[in-house]
Length: 135
Image (cartoon, rainbow, N blue to C red; front, side, top):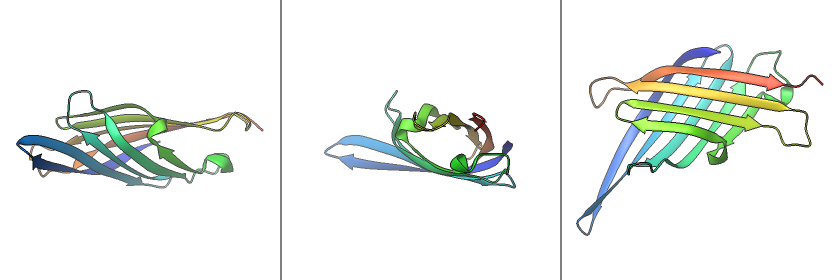
């Protein structure tokens, strides 16, 4: 599944006792005939800081997908790779069913880029894979 994705980013800076601290947050969403997804994250802006907060929900509408993975929630533990630099946001998430359940895995890749103007929205694509053992 691959479709259009739009994200909004917010950069907030605060100055305390002469030092500057900044954080960046974004909220992404997509909806088409196959999936609805919503993702939010916050980042520190220091080099290599990574995501300080991450969460999301995926709802899959495809009938061939097992019921167990049609609605899943993501947290920071599911965020395998992420990149927020300049005009680009990229991330890979991986959700897997607990060991006591049959094997099921959902992988989501998001790639978005902001336009040239600072106020431009981030737009891009997502790819979603579902891998599940036959039960």
